[in-house]
Every structure is written in C-alpha cells, then in structure tokens.
Image (cartoon, rainbow, N blue to C red; front, side, top):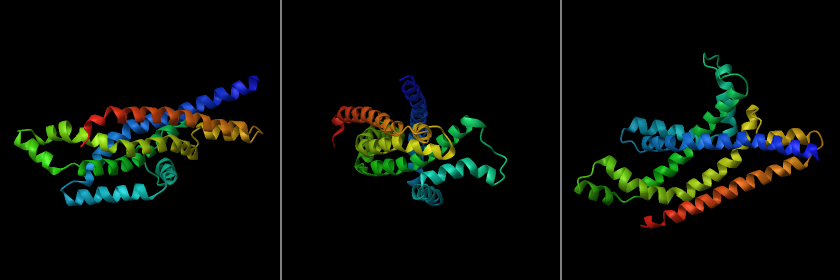
Length: 220
C-alpha cells in the first residue's frame, strides 16, 4: 500500500510539470499569436509573406520535431547559445517550442476572428471620432473573443494532451514517469495518467463553457 502512495505521489509531481508547461505556453502563446496575426494581415507585403511562411512551416511540421530542433539544434550547429543545464534547460526549451507552435495556431484563429468583423463597424467608429486603437480594443476585440472562444478552447484542450510530448527531450512529465514504472512491471500507472488528463480537461471544459455563456451578450 505504501508503494502505491509513493507512485501516486510521484505521478502527481510529474503532472505538475505538465501543468506548468500548459500554463506557461498559454501565457506566452496567446499574446504572441495576436502579434503574429497582425503580421499575417500587415499591409507591408514582404513582412506579411515572411510571417505567413513562418506560420506555414510551424503548422506543417510535427511539434515533436520542433522540440528536438529547438533543444538540440544550437549544439549541433555549434552556436554560441546554449540552454541552461539539467532539468531547467529542458523545461525552458520545451516551453519555447510549445509557445511558438501554439502561437502560430492561435494566430490563424485570431486572424479569422478579426477578419470576420464587418468593416462597417470601423467606419462607424471613425465617424464617432474614435481612434483605430480604440475601435480595435473597445469594439472589434470584444466581438472577436466571443467568436474565437470555441476554436481557442479546442486548441487549449489539445495543448493539455500535447504536454506529454515534452518527454521527447527527457522532461519527466507524467507519461514518462508512468513508463518508468511500467518497465518495472507496474502497468496501472499508465492507466492512471488518463485520469489526471481527464480531470484536468473536465475542469477546463467547465471553465470554457462558463466563459462562453458569460459572453453570450456579444451576439451579432
């Protein structure tokens, strides 16, 4: 029985890494995604195409490959830059890879949401004497948030499960920890990891549903 408690405690500790990676990815990827979305809509054609090519590359290649390249790339290319040693370096590299990857996906969602807003609302705001920034933040953005919440929610839930890919660069997240126990003859920790993810996704689903209901007054 004591051994079961020890395994559960270690699984919970490993899932903390998944949770931290999830939260930090959202913290950095959401604002970065908005910046990238502005880049893809830029009137400066070279910048627009450069950003779109970057988004195409990131969305068109596996996240697992991006993790390997970002973590091992500087060393293989003999660059002066190097990640911090130990677990800290692996976690920072994973956070950077996840943030860039999800920012590109979020950028396309943001772009679609912004472009779905009628141009007439911009013209109406200008007639009322509002600046472009006031129109965006007080008129456009509020409607965009309502429209993009479902697809963003899907990406957020996908992110929860994708955090398990961090093990490819030896981050000891929950599935890697469960795999270590399965190699010792304990199969149940692998199934237990599913409970952790299901509970986390369940809480997120409830939260996203609540947010969607709170934004119902932005019906257009």
